[in-house]
Amino acid sequence: MDINRELRNLVSTGEVYFGQRQALKALKGKKAKIIIAASNCPTEELDKIKAVSGSKVFKFEGTNVDLGAACGKPFTVSMVTVINEGESRILDLA
Image (cartoon, rainbow, N blue to C red; front, side, top):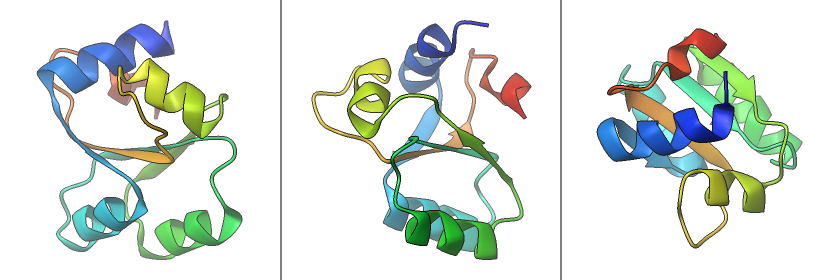
C-alpha cells in the first residue's frame, strides 16, 4: 500500500483532524478510528494520546513536514486523526 497516496485520498474523500489538540478532542468524543503520528512527534504528545486512546496509533515513517506534504497541506502536521476514512484504505494500516 502506498501510504502517501492513501493519505491524499483520505484527506480529499474522508474526514480528518490535524494536530494533537484535535486528536485529543476526537478521542474524548470517541470519534477517532486511527491516529497517524509523524516520526518526530514529541514523546509527551504521543504519551497523552496513548493514555486516552481507545483507537490505534500508527507511526508514520516521515517527519511532520513529510506528513503535511503527504496530506497535501502547506504546513507541518504532527498527527492526523481519522474520523471517516472515505474512499481510502487507510484503516488497513491498523
